[in-house]
Length: 408
Image (tube, rainbow, N blue to C red; front, side):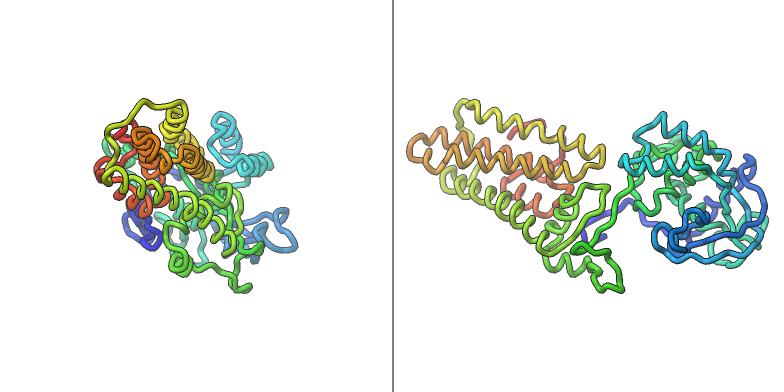
């Protein structure tokens, strides 16, 4: 996390005792509500996917993900009555069409559930690592009922009293998960919560996978991308920028050094970096290194560019709300392009000789646009954005989105 300049509110391990207590409580609630029963299980299991598969799901003897599967011999197992929740899940998907995204993944989940749900084996007796089943130490809980519960154990569940963290932060606004574990989050997890009479998360978004130079990333191919080397080669902010802008978030994306170099050079060095340098150089030489104060009336071109900048927060906010991160970046890139076009057309270096007052107005407009750009780029490129804000002399306590409403 530190490597990529990312922070988290809390880091937990599912081996911590508070988590185990939370899982056991959820188990007891499910059992008391008649959602768990003891039976026996045999079937195909993928260790890599930590998932059971029906015979009909196998492709050439392997899991749909390509993982190897092994036959689990008949053994006693506790089951969750997943079949009881098939219609309730379908009803929920229909009432809340944005519950699963992107649409292609939603369609996959709906088709899977419509195909019929079987009760889910949720315990094992063949290993002893994990959370033991309450009142039956011979059984250990299946990994997903254990792992999924960390969403609420991190909030102090089973403490759901008013004012508790659970009461404050649940239901979660968004789960972001890999597409390979969407079934667990969009089918099993909602069913567990329904059975426990707990609120469901508002939205589950499945992101895709990265390939490299058009090939699947794997150790056997020797094409694994080392994030440490990536950051050391290109820097933290350029790496973050590329990963969030190169691919439609939710789809698979392809990485290559050529694409990385091209995009960083084009959008950051040539467009954003050069624009900022041109503005600052002109202000330093012609406005005593400060934001111009004595400016003239805004022209139509000034108003249009400022209006585009002022609407940037709303437009990017809508994209983030739908996890369209690539579109958020597109808006930012377009804004910088518009500013570059504006400075070329207005040519403040010429105005310096012909109309100094107009030059100051143009530079003021450009600095105001850059203030908006730098503030809104902070979530994506925090270090670079704050360097620009420092250069623009924007106070550190005036860099929040709420300060976009006021002009300097």
